[in-house]
Image 1 (cartoon, one colour):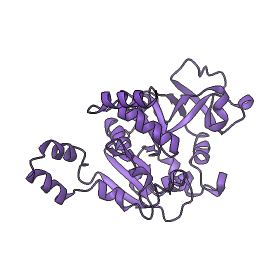
Image 2: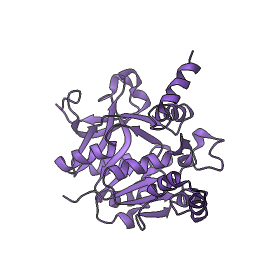
Image 3: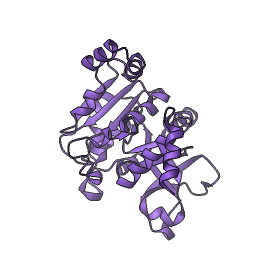
Image 4: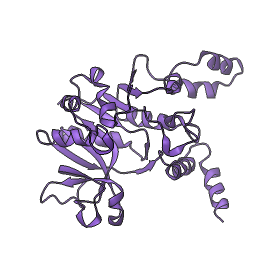
Length: 293
């Protein structure tokens, strides 16, 4: 079983749900307290042992590449002014040379197409996919938890978490294998996925969260995957085909996810990460308490 060393991050989307903020700023670069949302996702992957990142970008996303580059003028100014603590923190977040690749998705053909654009770099390696819209707050990173599960069972792993049954119609949920007791296990064999099912028809209340560990054979399927919902090439459609030949497990991770692609989800993420921030957490909690009175 090959280790998972590569992560694919699709960052080509327009961020229409949080306009006008994303008219000139990539949605992935919107700040969550003191760093871009994307930095949290990269940190999660690094915590899981990821060695190489593939960013699938689009037009007007140059700020992402620039963010992960050296900023010589800024670094020089910080050193000359004696701001060594800020300088050290900035350098600590700089990626290892050669550990990031950037490829273009010229046409917005869907998430599946975006992942397929990374095929030449992924090659014949298993890989992780992390959706940057989703931030997950947890003691051990969500992807690191998934890696532990992958090292036990191999195959393909999809991160899920339980939602109230009256809300299942708002999400894509997994379909456990027949006889699988999905309510008492953290690692669940699955044989399907259902997009926004009616409550009475939902096969489970485990929503798909935006973290995946996938085998390279998926890229071959994405190459000829027909357009699905919304006229786009859907990642879930290709995964459903791969499920005919390979094992898929849903993994119930420990943590809380935030949908930063929506305005209220973005606000919720800012409040949550502010309260747990090492430097301003206590002040943030006090501020939120005062404002809620």
